[in-house]
Image (cartoon, rainbow, N blue to C red; front, side):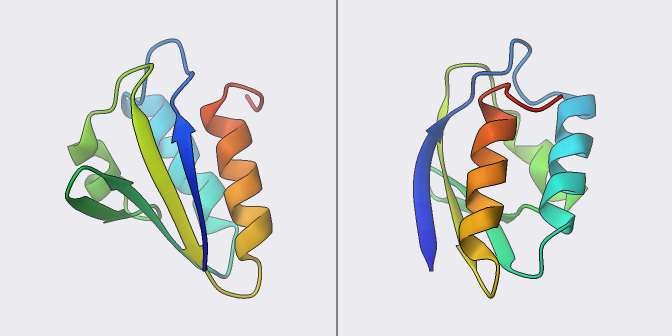
Length: 86
């Protein structure tokens, strides 16, 4: 399992469009991917689950992935949340 703490650096946080793009990114990977915030653990491939988090710019979260491509998945999700991928 690969885990990494990440700060959301998207200007508008994770509103509807960025959440949809994040779910698309997570769905590219074979690994199980979860976003953890406080006591919540949400499947990153679930648009409804991700929308329920309502994350704002500057908030901290943990990305956890387990599977064959977990390292790549966490790296690319970190790039997305850092605003490095459009």
